[in-house]
Length: 80
Image 1 (cartoon, rainbow, N blue to C red):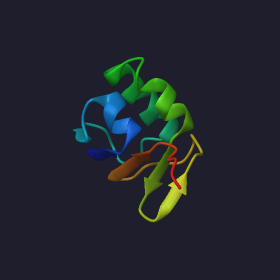
Image 2 (image 1 turned 180 degrees about the vertical axis):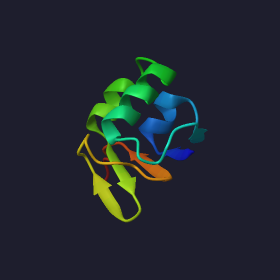
Image 3 (image 1 turned 135 degrees about the vertical axis):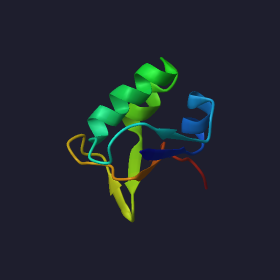
Image 4 (image 1 turned 45 degrees about the vertical axis):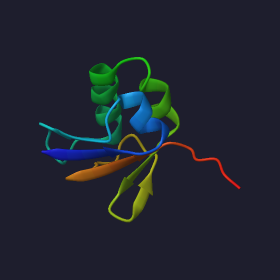
């Protein structure tokens, strides 16, 4: 099982703030992006393309990296 938490625009695009997927923790970021795009449709796909994936304390953009049991989807944030 992999817990996915969505923040800001990612939560808006997915329509939820968190979900648990029936996937093994050795799923890669690329595989996760494909799974989430298929699951949530065209609104989430472009967000995933620019998002950073927080795994533990590490921010990951590499599609070949594994996500582990929990991953946070962080879209670009603006502010000032």
